[in-house]
Length: 620
Image (tube, rainbow, N blue to C red; front, side):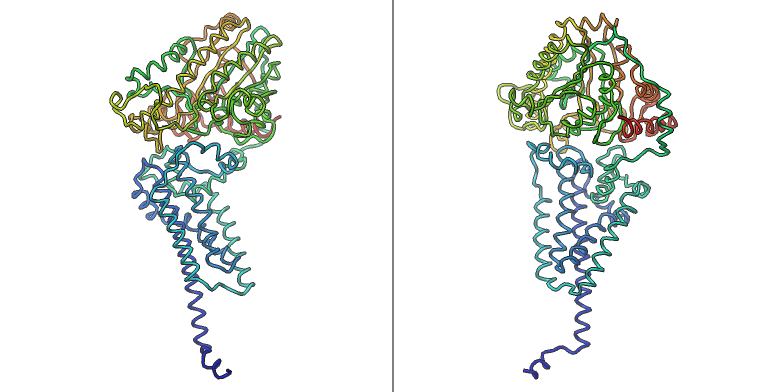
């Protein structure tokens, strides 16, 4: 036996060479697998947005070594980290593939469905993801199947060709800690670095004013990690708490005169837009008939367009801008100053409705933080009146009836501020034929059958929404108490994966032009007053209101009512005089209506941001 052992044992120098070769092989294979995972994530990024040429985008990644490095580094470090922790290459592969490709897949489908990239702040909505995605059709393209094939091949490669791992616990502990340290340093020093993010601009094949295209121009993993900057409150440059407090104190709140305290009813309409703004659809008789009552209502109101921050999703951005006046905001986690609190302090009853779940966007808590005394959701009111699934299709009539009943009960006790968020018309919209009604046909509109079906379902819901709003004005007109009504859309509707319907109707979504910017982000608003309100305020509530950001809508309402409002609103008026557009993409309007990427009065704008931050973070 001893002789046999001596014969089969490799010479020491051979064992040493074999061990060295094995380590080199493992190092190369692990790093190569990590790079393959990162490369696959770049394939998903390049093909996510159908408007972009995927091959051009892929070549741009390869031509920019820094973008390539920043997208490949995380999967490489992750595969090494999990390898050191487990001593198994296949575990390292899983630890790299699952999170990196998981992010890439979510980003891929989110952009295809809603033209919106996957950001770190979306992680806060993880519990709501099913509700947000529900109803959308996920297209399992060749790339998804290719990713599954890569997963199986990579796992088999790691299991059968990389069986032996590093054994010494000291070496493994050192390696694991080194990977963790490198990840931490890279995260803070590279991925959160705004200057580096600006230096990696890759705009040759994209529109630099499109947030989704700018995101994709840097890959997927890198811009996703960079978006963690928005997870936590970041004070504006030059922020000083005491200075901001003193500056804001220079603009004290003004009370509403008792004789001018009319009630206000606001409703944000889900995915509401005027399709006659698109030339191809304004020529269609069926579309014109749907919007005819809305246009009649606009003639009786002050109306215009909101230039929102969002497209096809992100509802609460417009909602909270209206309620707070904030041009930008964090998630609300505690009582926060708002226009709702101001009206409540002025003696208004504050309440509202949403025929959906209160946990969605955490409205059940946020509305309380913003000053609402009572709010009805599916859980505490609407569940007994309309099924939450059917509420997407038909709940506006119920919302209007409940609102009128509530006002009749509450108005005798004093002025009210009611704000509701509709749920009817939430996308997606079916691409199957609409039974019993056709607003558009492929032959008549020169559109594909799928596009006509999507538009028909949307128009059918919108037609019922408009009828409900007209009925609401009729009910408010019958009231003896003065009431002002504010209606506005939150964002443009979803219209086919990859905006296929918008493409067919020839929508101008060139965000570098004011027309394209307005078509992409614009939603209608109107402010209407009943006879009692018109008499009490000496205001006819008719005319052009202009186009502006949602954060200025409450100010427009106060101006029409003749109210000075809270001190912050006085500062907001000054900002609006210099630029009626304050957009999340750093887009502004000059006083003569030109689109620009610099605020016309930069010094005041920076001062305004500091006071806004103070109001959001330090008050209440």
